[in-house]
Image (cartoon, rainbow, N blue to C red; front, side, top):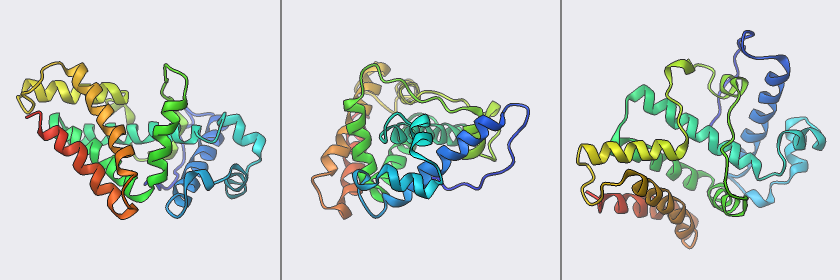
Length: 221
């Protein structure tokens, strides 16, 4: 989960308005994540989110068209955190894919309803689904100790496809060679494994999810 202390923000890139917006998003997401450890996302109501974040409903809907948009922003934050770790650790190929899998394993383990609702939101969002781009203020609030010029930020799809291409080139994957098709299959299996894990008891969901996607990946070597 993302619980990061907030440091002073750079005045050269961030206005007071964008700083306030980033703090609001930070508070909203952290509250939702905390509550979803104990109850389903569907039972976390906008009214209580606003009360906990000390904002009005008008302010909430200024930044989120609907409650589910909190999940789409969270997805962007997860993707950014993966890009940071990949850049810092210089991860490639299967190692990078395993990092992605493990981040989702954590989500399924700690907040399974968020994992399920994320899949549902994607299904019910009009195509094409555009990622939520983090502002400079968002980056400073959620990742205060990161120097972003040193980070290679990629979309989730491009990140996965890059790992697949590396895996093919160094022969970690030998059964297929088209990295675009492999990325599509990986993401399909990732979201499908979330759905499949839902039929199990909650204490088994993370194991079922992790085993499903990892076993599929092993079949490609």
